[in-house]
Image (tube, rainbow over all chains, first blue to last red; front, top):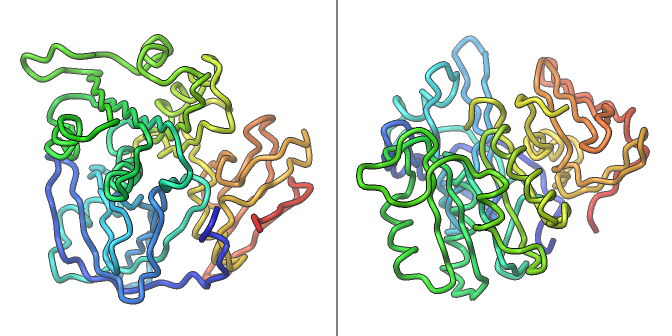
Length: 250
Length: 86
């Protein structure tokens, strides 16, 4: 992968929060300005570190949801009620506050237009974050790589980047976005409901002969199910890349 | 090995970069038990007081990382070799 093999010390930087966007009742996008940020690739993540006065530190990883943009990057954070870090990021941090972070990290779960496609992007909930960086980069670059994005949400109010996704689905050439709802669909919804199981993937994903490059991100259960189903359907395991959150999610 | 608690090797990218001084999630590792080669980012990681990386093919423990008071130790007992991308 070009650009990822550079020797570089990974050091903690102090970033300033420059924007907060409420995406859903539980999800917030935080844009940070990081002095000397070297840039990043879609799919990469950062580590965020919080320090208490007594020296206790808590650290979490968050995917970057925006393509490279100078010294700026955006992470999309889901509030976990019993979380140690996410409630601080979503409820306490304000524009102008500073946080410690390091990155960019990751050379495996990354995509850039030169890697080609067709692209299959599958996410559960806030697993969409790194895939959104890929989709935004593809649009920004004017790339013609065909994209199918399959998104699984619990309910209509959980959709992250809803307006942007609607606009992309309506206006972008070669990009198809499919939503499915596993608990309750929005009123009047006539589209898909239920999990992204093998039958759903057989009809929505590319065929194995089209050799898609698949990126699957979300809670571990969803990623396990989708990745196994894709391989069972005949997709090349080496072209099914995964990013699992663990049991609860981001 | 198919429970819903693990994450991917990608989650250790920051710690491994700190130790090795370069991106390691795209480095390849050969499982000392089954011999299969995977990118470290595709290994399974079980997080606890330390992080345990396992081969996604056979479940063998490949790499264990432990951080105690700013010191980081990486156990490499379960890999035959690791090879960063050129």
